[in-house]
Amino acid sequence: MHPGAFAETTPDKAAVVMDDGRTLTYAELDAASNRLAHLLRAAGLTVGDHIAFVLENRPEVFVVAWAAQRAGLYYTACSTRLGVDELQYIVNDCGARVLVASASTLGTASQVEAPAVQLRLAVDGEAEGWKPLDAALAAQPTTPVDDEAEGSDMLYSSGTTGRPKGVKPPLPEGPFPQMSAIGTLAIALFGMGQDSVYLSPAPLYHAAPLRFSMAVHRVGATVVVMERFDPEAFLALVERHRVTFTQVVPTMFVRLLKLPDEVRDRYDVSSLSAVVHAAAPCPVEAKERMIAWWGPIIHEYYAGTEGNGFVYCTSEQWMAHKGTVGTSLLGPVHILDEDGAEVPVGRTGTVYFEAGGFEYHHDPEKTAGSRDPQGRGWTTLGDVGYLDEEGYLYLTDRKAYMIISGGVNIYPQEAENALALHPKVADVAVFGIPDDEMGEAVHAVVQPADGVAATDALARELIAYCRDRLAHYKCPRTVAFRPELPRHPTGKLYKRLLRDEYWSTAPTPGP
Image 1 (cartoon, one colour):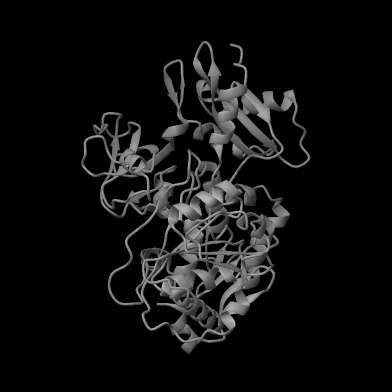
Image 2 (cartoon, rainbow, N blue to C red; image 1 turned 135 degrees about the vertical axis):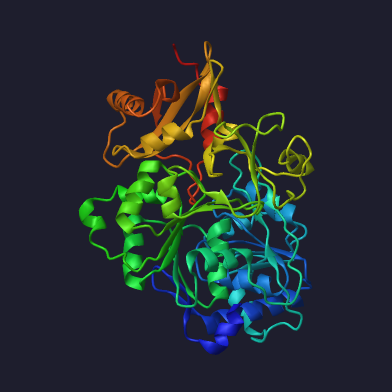
């Protein structure tokens, strides 16, 4: 149930393998996390206190996380892409008393002003006021702290629609150790066990990669970590390590499918027994092609950092209900209109979960905004969708991105899904921009594929391509090009940043 158990039974087994070959065994992970837990106790931290870290994908992420997890502390993993003000906001908002950084993040982390932080640890690199982690741990014992208790992550949303929101769950009750909820699901749904080899291709500061990887350690399996996702390197790692289990986001599927056939055929991926995807709606064509390539081993779920619901489907269920994200495993799902009334089957509305309340840390207004208007305690992540007659949920888009053009509601995810598979498109965002006549007009910002020129002819081609697949009113009327879109490494698009540019500065398009 935690690395210490496997340090005794399989001490030399790899707990972590990096894509460059660096390895952390269970014995090493157990010893280092125990040392850090003692150091945190020596610094005065007790059960319920808080630490934060800003680290790229590297083995030490797990040393820090497991030290906090087994010392009964809250730990916040911060994005390495944050600026000083953004990082400072999170570190202060969560009340961290310890901050951990690496050479690549010290430049930003050193500028963070956080009065509650009493200890700053540098995994590598040097900066004034920071203690080298290795030296600080050397004098600490490798045995567990006397008062081991289950801690918890406290993670922040990525802030695509405003300031990041922290989700602080209650600490687990009962004796240490305990299996996590994610671990229980991974065992039951995805067949995770001690012989699994899990490939984590996304940043570990994001909820799902971190939680799934920690769950893998609770069963004594191995986590293979990519520093950053590359589609061919992903396939090579599956073959090299005989990976059995992985979690991806739909943009990774799209990039894998855009590899030349000879590259995709070069690698043996037959070891895969479960591939999980989440975080964003997946284009139907992309998922059809992935199932045809890898077989019916692809699982999908819809959930959030908030932990207020879990919707799930197998490949077989999805093939019978193409486009669904599944059915709820944690109580009923409700689709509500603006007044909080339930809408009929097949009609679109805001998705609410009946199970699992949560609170946004230090933000009662945002917490209240997540509750249903009629006060039944149901909660939403802000997504829009509908249910079919069998209770399968289909996501349409986030409510914040709905376009109202001439009084008609348009959800841009459909156009994004259509354009994402065009061979000349590397990435795409669709949103509404000001229009004098219609209120809003559908607009696309496209990152062309490598070697493709951003031309007026390409814009016309993409609009026509979309119109061949969707009703014309759902398709972009205009297309702009960017060398790169502001996408989070986890796959989430910072569409708000693009949309805000147009609403504050762009001229309205013609009719």
